[in-house]
Length: 262
Image (cartoon, rainbow, N blue to C red; front, side):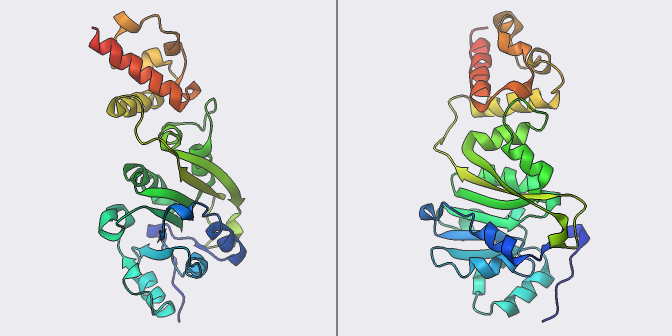
């Protein structure tokens, strides 16, 4: 079979190191909670080779690249409808997966944040994610409060998932090599089914706080807070990057309460 050519417009950088591929696949640890796994962007199947050897779950592959799909159909002739030619971002999970499932992949870096937000939108189904990201995105996901890397994505993900930075991957193990370092992280669904606050307001508070992250929350959230009722709250003297998920929940409740009492 002729090899698949990496396409720049799809953000393709094919992993070539089988040891790293096996390490990524073995990082799936919550498989007692699901029996189906979806690999995003399998390319020529270096992860798929190890995934399809596993007997504790059923592997599905999705790739928007027609050339990759044709290659994989020849490589895995028995895969049938478990190989999907389509856009992950447009996939209706319930059409394919009746219950909970895991996600894995060497994700295209140009849509990695969109992948994570789709995971969040479907967090009741997606139990675990193991993925390769650009290193700075991986760090942002796993970062704790108090640093410049900590941001909107950190808070949203950590509200519903345990986020672990697993290992760094050098550019030389990809074809073509990316111009950045890469890293693998694992998301494991936590026990939070619903935040203990108005979730719509929570999203607004987090986004507004980080969209003007150099300002104190008093200024960044000026359009959301009732200054008459909350003017002396010391949390408003902090910047968004200092607040944990729990702090944002408390702040959301305070804002919600002050609006009700105004």
